[in-house]
Length: 624
Image 1 (cartoon, rainbow, N blue to C red):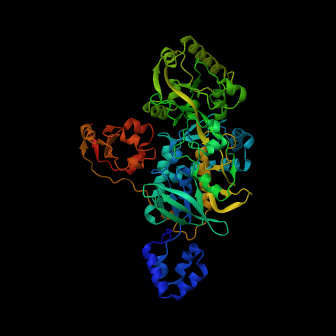
Image 2: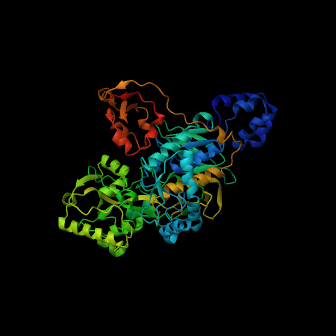
Image 3: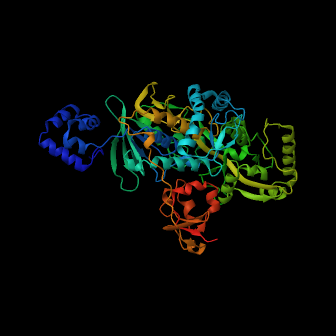
């Protein structure tokens, strides 16, 4: 019982039967005293109340991490009739997947409407991966991309109807929702699908729980985990399963002494990051402890555009300004009001052009940790902003973007001479007409209007940020973890950012959510199921919110519920009590608590689709 394999009542019954010298129990104990997992697996075969009451059914898999990779693996196992223990060290699901904003790549659900094909997608990904490209992993990623996006649409229920072209891509192949931010939408819907199994007995979710170590048997197979509670009581438990899936993410936010960041890229230790503070390489440490190989650990992606919050510019945590903002026509300017790159280039290319403003970097191509991180202006015209309306509204609400009328006001905001800025913009307009510029840009979207004095601009300050770790545990194309001698470690699997090698030197925008879905699905589909329950025909139904006659309320009524312990918010004409949900909100409670007692329609619509509210019963409706 103290290892978490049975409860204390079951243990008491077993002890009683042992003292009574139950002959079948004695035989089983004699042969399997050194392997409790097998002991409990065979226990039901001895008949009688001993086996039926004492055995706690072992899961088919333990999944560590609740970002998209972990949730994808979990849902695939559950849909196949398996049993899962899902473990998360944080209080909320979603991880960094919840923050994703640009989209998910796939080729070609649109039947090549936009001229794309698998070979072109492979070449774009390989070009970005450069000398560290792993063809077998890239082929797996690309060839399964269409199935991955179709699964998110059909099984998970995510709208991915909008298509865009990001930097480094030769075609439009990045999918996102028509409403809401892609990461928030995917995580909400897939966590909802996973949680629907909670009452079936097939799923156990352990939040606020950290995996401290892996359990191996005498043959070297991984057969479980030791966990500790992180919610205050520090209780420990051993959980066994024939398969463990690591989906714990990267390490870009760990700046502690001895961290992977310090070990492999010490010059980046002072650079801000978009990853959550929970991104500390836990799964890499766990895998390494059982001999897993590591690959590309020095390949840490610096994304060129993280928003600088004017109210908190030195905060090391940044919100990503995704490729979409440049893909729709966003223009990058330096402190002199000049362009300096093809905004649609790869992340590595744009970052290099930014860092090259520093003389030391320009000469050495290595960042000096003592230098100030440079900042730049990202500017969208009114037509470009329309191409990313949800994102623009979201960033406006957060105070990361500001709306500016006319080029003169834009020059004042950028603190550059109006003549210099006008010269840059006029040249950009001329380049757009000819179809190319001096940096090789050939696609021009959202070009500012001819009359710049009446153009509406949306502008914010951006800076390079640590965004993604290409390195991690060595895996094969099936998601099995490989040891330092290139052998599969039995029972251990990995998916998502915790694994390495998929992206080579530099990850292509939109390939992170794809990696999570592709390799999460591959792992979830290969895990053996001991005794499958009834499968897809009997999936738990996702029940819609109950239909009730809700009372008529005024905003004055809503305003009375404006504390952390009493949170009412009006959204789309209905009032919701989100008090209990605030702590479960994947993006954190702050964005909900700050809207307590208010109308949050605008803020909600900038991030989510209206369908997300189907799970919540309104407490009332607002009187028109």
